Length: 142
Image (tube, rainbow, N blue to C red):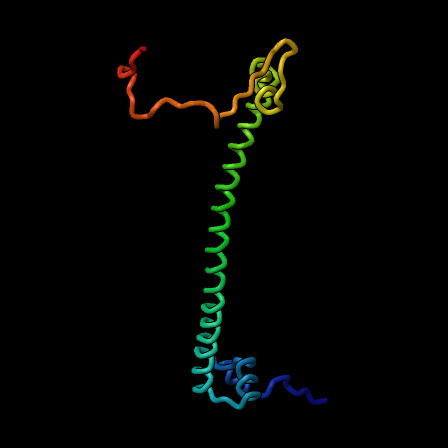
């Protein structure tokens, strides 16, 4: 019975010399490249990949800038809404605790009056105005 070696002696000698990269040898034989040509292919592929990332990266930078601007607008809007919210809380608190303020609002906004009050309406078009170029000391009594 004869035993045959798994690997050919030539491959073993290459591995012993330090040049036995089976994956690289298969790639070279598959694409019919020489080692010299292969040394140029990897940097070219690396450069193409870098350019692709650069082009895609510029779009991503633009998106980041747009998102940062939207964020600033939302922050300003949020601050304005918080300010209005605080004003409303103060208004509600004042309406609950200050009856004079509540009465003032009822009179101005809803036109409410007390039962014993008399309201006078003046037509502003018919009222006389004092002359504008006369000072207080220039009036004479007749």
